[in-house]
Image (cartoon, rainbow, N blue to C red; front, side):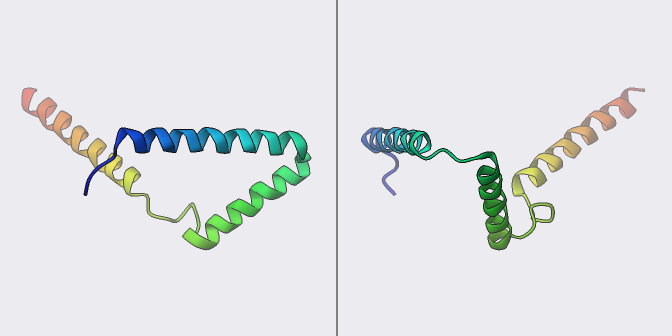
Length: 85
């Protein structure tokens, strides 16, 4: 693997800025009503749930890692506190 080149990052950033500008222009030309925006958000949530399952039941590896690290730190603190008593 060659890694990320600065030129690739610049191209990505330029494309991202162009897409954001296009999105702003589209929103100004065709603004959504509150009801349309809410319906679109619900549609995106339904699509995400169809693809990935319930957001309340899916496994989140980052949260699991953070929970594990928190309990490991707590165990170290507790052990030190008990040892020093």
